[in-house]
Amino acid sequence: MKPEDRVLDALNLEEPDRVPFFDFLYEHGSFENILGRKIEKVTPDIIVEGHKALGVDLMAVNYDPPDNWEEKYVNRNIKVDEWGVKYREVEEMKILPWYLEGPIKNEEEANLYIPPDPDAPGRFRTLNKVLELVEDRMAVSLSVSGPLTVAWMLMGPNYLFKAMASQLKVYYKVMEMATDFIVKIIHRAMKEKNINLIFLAEDLGDVHGPFCSPKTFCEKILPFIKRVIREVKSHNGYLLLHCDGNINPILGYLVDAGIDAYHPVERKAGMNLKEVKERYGDKICLIGNVDASTTLPFGSSEEIAKQVDECLRIAAPGGGYILASDHSIHPGIPGEKAKLLFKIAKKKSTYPFRRILNNI
Image 1 (cartoon, helix red, strand yellow):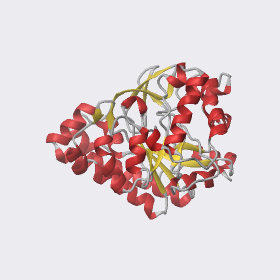
Image 2 (cartoon, rainbow, N blue to C red):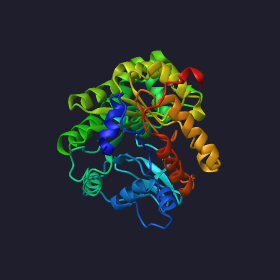
Image 3 (cartoon, helix red, strand yellow):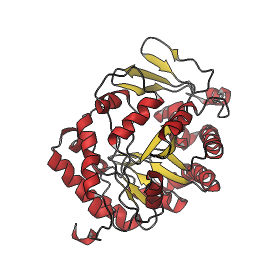
């Protein structure tokens, strides 16, 4: 079975020949760990080679700055992206450096702010090359940040949630602007590149729970996510939600809104795979739950195998599961451990599986 067909079967809550594999792999150090050599830059060739070395069926690729974009630095280590957001680059975090601040700190700056142009040429340079290199050996998705994530970066968390509570005009202006950009990028990718899988990276909580109450979430955040989902569905595509943290109180609303998959079912944040499978396994595909904080970086091969077996026995029966870590293959995970995860899984992931949820 081709990887894309395997992934689509899982998303359609059907049983493919085996459980598909996925993981977020993006950081410079992660590729060096997996490939076992120093690299100058994360190029499309490196992206494809790294994912092939892992043995995954699905990969996620970001859109690019436009062709005419030139890297901007305040100083040697502080970078400014096309949104005007400042980051601190460190050796181990080059692709997703440390966030410092956004360009919107008050209402005046919100009113004057001009967002990047989603229709600018060059948005899919990396995607084009990856599609050319991959052919049919992996399914390829486009990864985009969600509305709240974009607004968070533009405003910073303190001003974002202050505006959400008491400066609604500013809050809605920035959220609508962010959503406009996201929807247009998705529209272009799905129409021009025939991409049918969209990963929406939208963290809505931390290990303690959602960032706001379910009521506030439904009133002030969910409508923007729904607009993104509608755009994906209008192209007969699949919306795969990446959302770290413990989101148990709001996950049902996201399921009802029409997401097709939920990643990463973060074990270390208290997301119980068995409970999520029992509640939503007949509605959405689940992706992840292998611990990327302790088991993958520091665990033995036996401990990794035990967790892989647990995830497969819980979530694979009946379809609707894609094996992955509960975050990403980050630079703290040794390359051999990352490859071992999927090597072990390949031996255990062939269908059929017995339904044994009640025995776990």
